[in-house]
Length: 426
Image 1 (cartoon, helix red, strand yellow):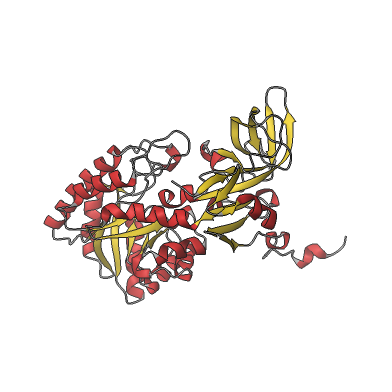
Image 2: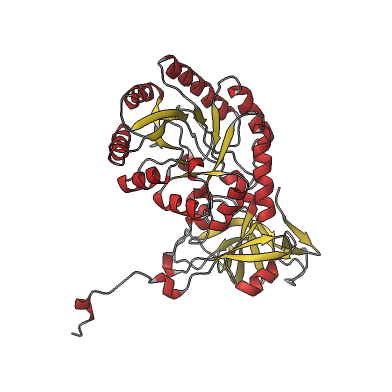
């Protein structure tokens, strides 16, 4: 569910017409619904109300300060994967004691920042990382609380680029080796093992991979406790999918009930890392039609958004529904439809937002909304082709607020400089 809907054939976000936002701030523009963000958080949290848990929002999905603050106000923590995300989380008001630090490539300086901030724990991904974390914690006179990220070799049944729980993936440590690492961690003066971590992938549309992974985690936790290692936290990651096209992912209520049943007698505090399921359908990117072009074999609708704004279609061949913002705007018969590729101005054949899409006919100047763009939309955007990144807007009932300015040409060259030797005339 989301709060993007038509009123008299005009597409609204909550009580604000998208056309008004675009007239005010231009295009392309990312638009988020506060009501949808809060609703998704409540629905996700509800099935866990009777078990100890922390919802650590996976902020790589969408890391704007305003979005983070919405979740902070609802009691969320954060799952971070860089020092920059730690900085953002703290700037947005998230409690460091509710932050977990994931990722395979943590630098010493990032470890120091997280240790000094007092985060809840590090999800450790390798033996060498553990050794460096122990060294940095002792140097700072601190204890690093850790979980080992376990790779359970479970097929998440998702796109291979976003699968993380198979033995061929770079993430985590296999079950047998993780036991040895826990034993080593227990002897380190700068390390306190307090949890077990696992994340098998993103955009999962079946419950069975989660349940298979939980069975393996249960066995690991029981074995570690028998070995004298006090496992207090079980971090089961995120990954619950959303409907982009015709997917039918599990409802959060069903997912939550299944998880709670599996862990109810494990005596652990649960950590959940939802990302896409909270923000994916809470955001759209709105773009304006520039031109139409009839190719030899197909029609192209050229818009002012591009793969630098929304890379998922190019990267994953991902599907985003295309909704016309003003369905009363004349473009031939109201029932006219076309089959077309929606493409951007980037100088790449891979620059497309929709392919062979059966959609309402359009004309130059029309606005199109690419739905379900709240997750991995702006956060994966770039300046490729020296294109300023888009503006971000948050709608709150009858009002909207600019939560990130559109970049300028000056922003594009900020921090760059020409060495003096190149300035000499020849």
